[in-house]
Image (cartoon, rainbow, N blue to C red; front, side, top):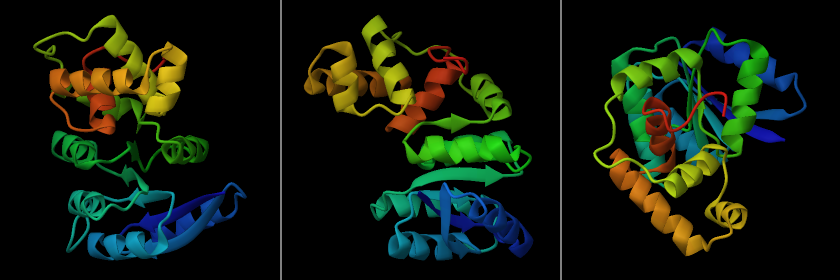
Length: 209
């Protein structure tokens, strides 16, 4: 069972999400928050598997909350669920450490699958957000990724740990870590979620893959 924290400033939205997820035995809603500050407090106290995070809220916004949760070492995966897919919303959220980004118009089953994928550490992007990222980051990396680096990035995008990637590629975990550091440097990112987002944007990863 995947534990969830729902963060949204609209009570009707929170009630709707709680009812939807609460009716499915795969999920357990352990708490709610109406703004980013409450989300940070609840995230630390409840330690949910996944946080459904709205972005534009009075007081502390979603991006600020995502950064603060990461700063405090809260291990929850953060799945942005918002109405907005503008340039000023998408990239800051992913760069802050969001595991995924979905729009509130997403169908119920798509949202369920996204939460399950996020709980496993997989990057989740709605098609419209992926398209926007491609437009934002279309320029190629200064140095292209090697074939092995692309293989590592593909496994990371599917939620593989360094150990699992090493087993699948028949290399050591240290070698995987080295490849991953090279990927970060070439793509100009600092973490896995941002690397996956840049990988989609620059054509190293595809939605079908």
